Length: 199
Image (cartoon, rainbow, N blue to C red; front, side, top):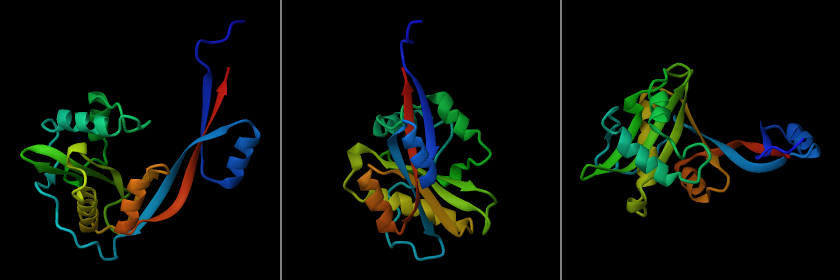
């Protein structure tokens, strides 16, 4: 029997050390590590001015510009890059989506940075906020926009009376990790992605 044109890949997303040990003993190789970070919303937020042109995402009007910018920034990212209109529409139709929690910074009508938040569970003390995705346009880096837009996202989550915020970031994205630590996030755990190719 001939081999398939492309090897079959079995992927495991593991957090516990024992499960990781078993995976490695069975030929799975770690290919990606995602860090889970958390921050209390009851503690003081950094003193930083809101970014220029801060406003909420406007579904139907901002879709294409945001998609183009997001795909440019995350061109090499396995999950966040290469989105199409259907991918975005699917997220915008989810019960958790709130355009008021999808913040854009703009300059002369152009999106310069964004912070998309998400609420898990009920609004209020029993829910938890997430920085779902945040980024700065390559044309506007070096202006502390990343810090400003994430703090704006945290302020929005705090207004929802949430006590805690979380996010996920790739281990190799040291610039983002440094930014989040400077805002008060700390590491809460790691998920390791393992892959096995079957020829």
